[in-house]
Each structure stands twice: as C-alpha cells, then as structure tokens.
Length: 85
Length: 438
Image (cartoon, rainbow over all chains, first blue to last red; front, top):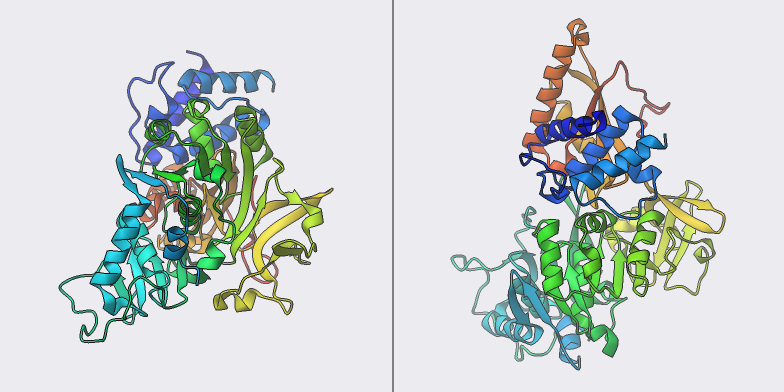
C-alpha cells in the first residue's frame, strides 16, 4: 500500500468517526465510494482534510472528466494530482 | 381565475406520479381534491397550513385548496405554526376545527378566491420566515406543450421547499410524468431514475456531483438538465454538457424570498452582463454599490421584503456578484449565510451553540469552499485558561463542542472543522469578519 493510499484510508476513518458514520470493511479497490459508509458531507470533509494535509484538492485543480465511483478511481485522481505537483 | 385545479382541468393530457414504487395518475389526484372540497366545505375561504405527509396527499391538498382557501401555508415536517387562525391539514378529526353549521358554498367545483401561498425559509434564529406568493408567480415559467408533455421529471428536492414545489408544478402543468426519489441514497435514486425512464432532472450542483459519483448517470437519456439552489460552476456545467450534448442545459437563479428569478441557458456559469438594466426581461436586474444583485420581478412582491426594496421596486437579493468582462458571476451570500449543498446554514445559530461550552470565549463560524458541496461550515474558537495550550485539553474541548453541535444542530450545520486559535478579529464596527476562506 502506498503512503498516499494509507493516508486516504486513515483520513476516511477519521472523517467517519467525526461524523458518526461506519465504514464498510474491507474497502477494496472496486468498492463503490457511495457504498463505503460516507455520505456526500463525509466526502466533502475527506477532500477538505486531505487538501489541508497534502496541500492540493484534485477536484478543483484538475478539470476531472469523470467523477470517481470506486476507491481505486479516487486514489487514481489523487495520484495523478500528486505527480503533477 | 387560473387556479391550480382549473389549469390542470384544461390540459389536453395529464401525467403520472411514481412515488415509493406506486403509480398515481394526476386525474386521480384531481378527483381526490374534488372529494376534499365536497367533504370539507367549511374549509372554504379559510387559511390552511398543509403539513407534508407524502407526495400524493400533498398534491391533492394543493389542488383542492388553491382557489378555494384564502391562504395556503406549505409546512416542512419540522415546522409548526402556532397561529390559532390557521387550520392544520391533514385535519385532526378529534378536534372540531370550525363550526360545521356554517353554510357551505354552493359549488365545490368552481374557485372562489385568489389564494396566497406561503413558503418557509429557515431564519437566522431557527424560526422559519414566511414569504408570500401567488399561484401565478409560482408558475410564471411553467407551460404546456406537446414536447414537454412527453418528459418524465425526477423529483430530487423536497416538494415543500421552493425548488421542489417548482419541479412539481412544472411537471404537472406541462402534462409530464414525475418520479419521486427524494428520500433515497444516490445509488437507489439512480436505480429509480433508470427504472422510471426519467428524461428531465432538476437538482443542486451538489446533487448532480453525487449522481456523477454513481458512475451510472450516462445510462439515462436526459433531454432537460437543470441546476439550481447553489452557484453552478463551469466545470460541472461542462461535464454535464459533455455527457448529454443534446440536452437543454440550464441553471436557475431563484430565491424563496423574491419568487421566480431567471434562467441561464447558454451553458456558461454566471449570466450575461448585458442583462443588467435590460428592461425587456421579465425580471429587471441591476448591481448595487455593495456589489449585491438587485432584482425586480414583474409580479407583486411579498410585504416581508419591504425593507429590502428600493424606491424603484428592486429587491436586494443579498447575493454578492462580481462582473468579469461581459459576465456576472455569483460569489455567495452577503449575509454570511453558508450554502452546504443547497442547505442554508446561519453562522450565528452555530456560534450560539458553540458558545454554550464554558471553556470558549470567542467563536467565528464561516464558510470554506468545497468543490463537492459548494461550501462547508468551519469554526474558529478561542479558549479560556492557561492549560488550554496542551494538546489533550484542546482535543477534549473539541469533543465537547462536537457533542453540543450533534445534540442541537442538523448534520449539515455542524462545523466540519474546529480550529483553536489565539484570537478572533473583528472589523472596526465590532462585527465579525466572516470573509470566505478558500
């Protein structure tokens, strides 16, 4: 597991605890984001926290063509954005 | 008089509503409305407060009472009205609401009055503010045509709020079908939208992003795409246009306060600057010295807005705008009101809750931009006492604050981030500076 993936997973857990959500276990590469246990507010919090920790927000910095549906796709847009920093 | 029931009765065809998997024709709901008038003739010419139960009963009540009752208050489930003059609908049969010896009107089929509609918007103190409308003002942009009649609309907004009511009225008065998916999670909503053959969707930008996150939006055949309730950004407009290149893409500016606003159809964020001071439009627009958008609808304005209205009849929308080249862009609310995915949050209300914590001396609640939900709620707090610099104490205070918020606020109102800071700055007038943080 890369550091970035680990960081995203840890932040998801933090956000879930803050907002009284229960994450599904396990979250695999193909787990749908909308079935992970976080709702839209949870994802907005995740992206905001990651922006604070990583210094970038791929949802504003990349004109992403497709919104991520799975955990792998979410990780991929963060990896793509990290490599262009 | 062009009431709801009259207009529906004059349509060549009417559609079908699907809610929780059940289908009901509008014709059936018109019949139910007629039965309500027959069964409760004593309600005629009285003011009525409709509490939302389910979509079918709600629509039947609206059809029955517009043109029949003097006023309709559309009550969200969490709002109660204490006015004893108002009759609550559905009726509590145990209570004799009105003297039934009153002589009933001679005909229940025809309309007898011009009904004033009241819609609630959340106020700063948590108490709702009521704004009046007429059926005419609420339906200024709705029309029937053979093409519109073939559409199937999705209802993603709560129908007792302004935006949801607009979708319901648009669908019904154009003879189209309507699929109610309000109470479901995005993946379930998507399944219902696909199953119902939905072709027209009106939603907030945040809801559209959630639908995009399902990865299934492209499986719909959308011909009408509407965004409203939040600022529509260019990136989202582009994505939707790419996905549905043949669809009519529009974003709506409207407010519960001023009634109908205006529609932008050129696929670009903001609206053309040439619309300012263009008197040929159905609503006149201008920008104030404070960079607020002022709007002057053609219909009569609610009295509640008198203080916000200038001598020429322009209402201050309290929305801040910025003109860049030939375009006017929305920046947010000048009041500091935070828009979390279409839900309004009053920072003062959140601050009052946080200040209940004994360790807190000052607090500032403000918006942080979010690419997913438009804005998020963030709080800065200062803490009393020398021991507070210790990390463990800070964590304890944050836990206390979150607990207070969770007990007293709705989820979207709870700060997504609480920062403990050394001091909070005020502007020279002594007011908090709630300038948005990026």
